[in-house]
Length: 283
Image 1 (spheres, rainbow, N blue to C red):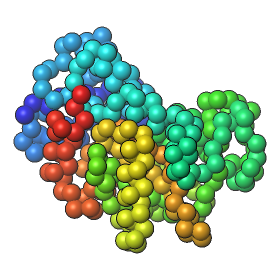
Image 2: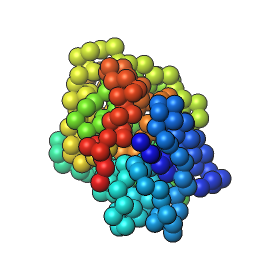
Image 3: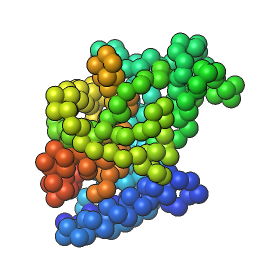
Image 4: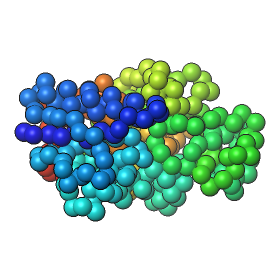
């Protein structure tokens, strides 16, 4: 089977470096599994020259959205998230509004331009994206003047156990617990540059609850390919709160997405079949 892995051009930015490496690792893994995989750089002015066969998008958030929109307009089939799912999930404020309207328990969230100090400490986050760049813990609740715009959100800081779980269509992986030092947010540094330790959630009852909740959230947002859903469990009151839905997660063999599915008994060979299946995400 011929597979083209679409990656972005080199840029002096850590997101580009991480996703270019992910594309390379994924293509190499496909070759070892017997697929005829090749890496091709995404350029919106040359999409008509893309090779035939399956087209898998392995790009960072902003480039992924641009590629999805371009390919959709050109009616070129691809494997990856839809533009609609990306736009819903990567606007954190809109995702919060959609989720809470459907009864999902979330930390209180507001636009930084409109926020008041409702809890101390609180988190300051860029409104768009899923990579945790720019996440800050405001211990005194004071929002920097430069961030008091609609480009940032504030979010109630919740103390609890950070969890992440893979979702693919109607299947959910085993939730992974992310081991973070007390008082440290799940930042870009702890997610990508020096990843925090993770392990399958030992509490089976809570794990099943997380899986059900993740599938419900994926349905609400119209997730149509691979996704990773982040939640936090407040142990003192047993509340399970939704944090984020990443509809274009890293999916290579060493990713949290792969580890979550593996822990649920879905081996890597089956994962690759799922990711490349005509039935799963090809438009």
